[in-house]
Length: 469
Image (tube, rainbow, N blue to C red; front, side):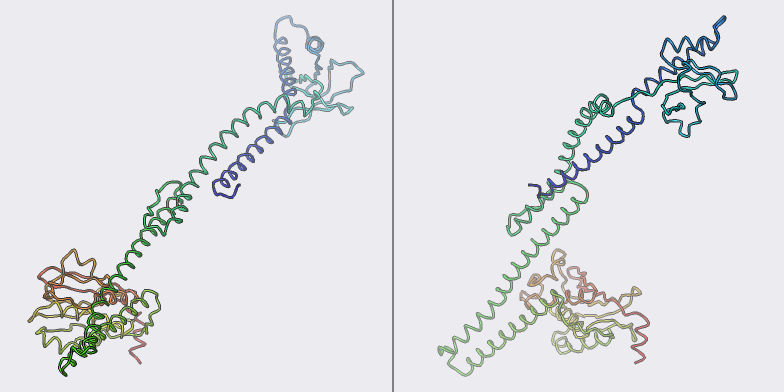
């Protein structure tokens, strides 16, 4: 019955409220017990008599103080005593057989009930006033006897039942509302979690306390990321299927031609075999790229980190593309310091990154164009490497998507042909990210494209140790 968060919160609030009311009740009862109503009434009566006696003493032709005290004692059924300045008893309105009262001792706690005991141990309430002549006027009365049960039932119980009952009822209502304020948003999150496999799941409305709102926002953010991931997976499967379909169709078609004798000449069989070989190689490269992406996504890629001379790496990449650049009529230039700071990286993986970048630049740079590979240390702990071409550029609305898997810019940029499967820049992005760096693009139509890779440098002391070796 009380397993839900709302009921448990309500019970917790109710327990705290009842505990608080119980503490208040105990404190009030103790306070009332220590100063009951009968005590206060008796003290008020004695103080009133004392005030009347002092007032009558100041009137002309007034009787003596002992006479006034005797009369007041008989009229109000109180005991009146007069002590001299040296605290010696000079008058006592009670009979000689009554127990004697000594001068009241000074009270340590002024708020405590004034009580003095006679020589028989009986307790008396008293009110004492020092007069102008130095004598002390004391009005006393036997301490009233009372029953705790009577005090509780007559003075305390009605107040507690009325005030405490109303307070408890209002508090429980407020506790119920507060528990709902906290539990309802959480219940909405639970309901949304149960519907997560559904494509129609919607974001949860943000409400409740600050902490619950933060949880709801985090859940909504997670939901958005999950939807984006699901969409990406669906697109990924569709793209892989599409990219695999074309080479498989070619392989199947030309293999069938060789089997049924359609390719009946040596030249046609050679052509069919060459196409089968090329398309299978294309599929093999695609599978390797997909495996690379999967490893990088899972964080299981085997990165062999070591100090890398970026100038030497860029020169090696440029030399690798020399035959292609010469055929395309494009000039590749490397601009880097002679002795650059070393970068902690996997040399093979970084070569793969810049190979992809230069390969893309060659595809979209017209004849007589140029590609520049540059490296410089702009910040103390980072190296900035740029691959800049004088190609046709990338439209602004496509720049945000070029690092997505299987995304290919407008084929018209490359003469209306598709180049690759659209995995090169995605792999480059993941490799740079795995190195703790970042990659970005700057491009304008007709003015070329610049790819920037930012990588962390190794500490200066580590650099010195490597160079000494």
